[in-house]
Each structure stands twice: as C-alpha cells, then as structure tokens.
Length: 408
Image 1: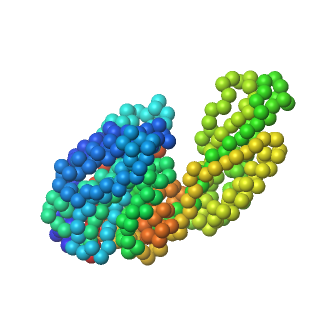
Image 2: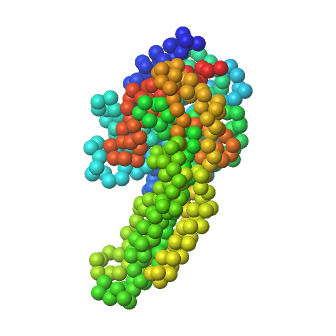
Image 3: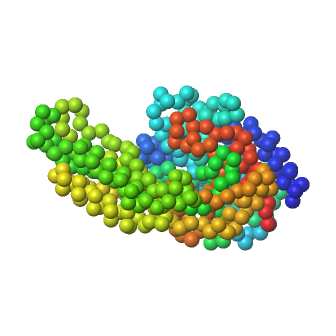
C-alpha cells in the first residue's frame, strides 16, 4: 500500500496547475440559487461533467431535481463512480456546486468571478466553499484512474445543488432516491481548520427566522397616529437575541461553545426619513446547542413575539426558512477512524472530533441514520469578501482522500 500511495500522491502533487485550472473554470460560472437572484447550477454542472468525461470518468449519472424557477427546469445532482475491489460499502465524497452571492462588491480586491492566484492562494467566490473540497475529491479519484489503481471500496463523488439555501433540491431530494446504505462512509469536505486536524461529527441545530411586523404608517411628526413597525422590530430583535441568556448551556465540543441568536438581514421599508414605517421584515440566524430541541426554542420565541406584539400594538407573523436539528455521528464511527488514520498516515497529525455552528448537508444525513463526517483543511473564508483557497491545502486534502480510498 505504501508504494501505491506514494504513486498516487506524486500524481496529485504534479496536478497542482490542473487543480488551479479546474478551480478557475468553476469560479467563472455563477451558480447562484433563484433565492439569490441566480439561475441555478446547470451551466456549472455541464462544464464540470464535460471536464470529467474528458479526463476519463466513465460512470456519471444524474439525479436532477425538478425546479420550474430556473431556465433548465432542474437543479442538477451528479454522481461519478469508480468501482472498487469491494462494493460492501461506498466511500462518498460530497461537495456542493452552488455558491453565495458576492455581497458588497467594493470590499473585494479582485473580480469575484475570476480566479486570481497570489501568495499561494486562489481568490474568488466559491474557491473555498465548496470548490476546494470538490476539486480535492476529483483529483484524489483521478489519481486512481490515471494510474490504473483500483480503490479498496467503491468511490462515489457527489456534486450537489442547493446547499447554500436549504438543500431542498440537493441532499434532501437525493435522500429520496435510495442512493445510500447505512454502512457507507460519507465524507463532506465542507468545513475544517487550517491544519486539517478537526473532524466535525456534530452540528448545532440551525433555525432561520423570517419575522414580519405589521403596524400602521404615519407622518414622522405624528408618531402617535402610527404604530412603528421598525421600533417593534428592533425591540423584538433584542428580545430574541436575549434568548442566549435562556438557552445558556455550554458545550466544549463547539466554537463558540454556546447557543447564538443573531439578528441579520433587514428588508427595506419606507423611502423617506419623515415616515413612520407601518411594515417591516427582519431575519434571525440561530445556532442552538443540540441539548435543546427546536420545539422548546420555538415555544419561547412565540411567547416573546406575543409580548412585543401587545406592547407595540402590532401584528407579528414569522416563519422558518430553515429549521434543522440532528444527532451526532459517533466518535468511533468507521468514517471518523478512516479520516483520522489517513490524516495520521499522510501528514503525521492527530485529528480530533469537534462540533460546529455552521450547517452542512451532514445534518440531513444524520437525521436519516447515516454516519457522516465533515473534514478538510480550510482557513474558513467562506461567504466573506476576498474568499480564498490555500493551494497547498487543496493538494494535501486530495492526498488524504486518496489514502482513504486505498484503506481496506
């Protein structure tokens, strides 16, 4: 095995420029969800599939989810398979093709949709989230194809849609397609640390709130004749943020080690300073320790909404664009051991298990009884301006995945 792994690692190291080229291709195609003003992932998926076929991948299948909102009519999900010596279980590497919007363009130092290489890093939207993991998985598998090596177990690369806005057309759809087995090894390279030493086995419960406050508009000089929806929104946002003092347990598995209730997006209301707004919409991003259920959190949210509605004489309605909770993957699950063994073998590092506050597709899988682990070497610049990928990390992660594919 050692000699074979050396051959695979040598191929991956020599593929550095090709990995950069694939990153550049993927970044140049805007794969934004309709919720983000985009047309989905179909163009990006087509370019990726064409590239895979040109490189020698032969077994490629689509599991596309219908979506009438995009011009292609579907949200693409692609599986590329490399048969193994054994098919007793499959080793999955799952990456998503969609990206988030660029945000405030003036905060970028480069064109977000054109990869720029500087000081060992690639800059551009999506280069780290999640194209680094996508490219690492592809080149780990490609090393086997190009060198005529058969992996120990069947390897499947999954390229998903819709991860950034809820996964309805991605992993949630795929979980209805009878693709996975309970003993499969599922690796999600969509989170980690700069050294690649953490294996994520648990996620905080994720709760997104959209809150609509309805009051009464009036002239700015006569606030007594109106019911200020913005004032009520601010009061409610503070009251919901205060839930951190109610659901206040700590868990050292996570960073931060407590539940968070953060006001985030606020929709525009009135067009003039001298108008008391009668309508307002704001959003909350809540990441809640798994020791609490979403049901008990929602009960407290409901109480506070009613209190603020009464105090300001407004109507408050809310819904949950995303609400997910899931159990943890056991620390002794095979996927955890395989990742830890490969990190030790390839890099001489001792990996440890952690929990995260960010949401990945792992939550959906764990809810269905599949043991998934999130791992990669990341600086965690995802969703930020000037997002970057460390090229050495991308190469090293591909080497680690190759070691996992070889493991008996």
